[in-house]
Length: 278
Ligand SMILES: [Zn+2]
Image (tube, rainbow, N blue to C red; front, side):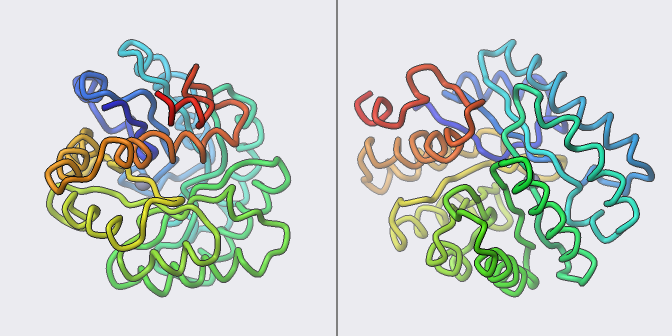
């Protein structure tokens, strides 16, 4: 089945992974800027990173017929460093006009500190100033509930933000209602063993429906599965969900959210109505 992987750190994956994704129906990936596995010591390193995910990765993906899009930011983990944040925020606007850049992300919180929250707010300002979509990382494990609540409350209190232009990712059973009730899009990230397995993700759709929810592999350097979405599709079929419903989750929903950026184009898929009729 054709699908879009809305969260994939392809910089950390091999070309074989692009091939596997293409063979399983992947039409497009979006790559949020993230932590590199080490703290970067200068804004110049971020400039190189942004160049990589806006130039080299789209070319590598195109070899397999996959469209590659990117989100830019200084991630929540390094966002603790306010001085570095200031410098990186100055270079981001220079990359926003690149043809594959859809918005600001994945911003958010990691340990939910005062500095992280200040960095998060700075990125939201940047997104508003440049009319960009926003992709948000919520913390994992014990910080998830608190972090998600702080993020949602911060955004909801800002009257300038249109929640339909914001994706709050890494949702779990206990955070999904907080996000959806505030009008935001949300994402379930699929992992082979830890965190949300395909089976657990299907449980969530059975509980919360399919409105404004996407799935993604969030594949990166760690244990993760670049073809996690096809595994999710299999699990949905195994439980008897119909093809139309599955297609809505893995293709139409992300196309609708991402299609709010004029840069996101998937030919006939750019129009959600055409996807439904497909
Ligand atoms: Zn990520």
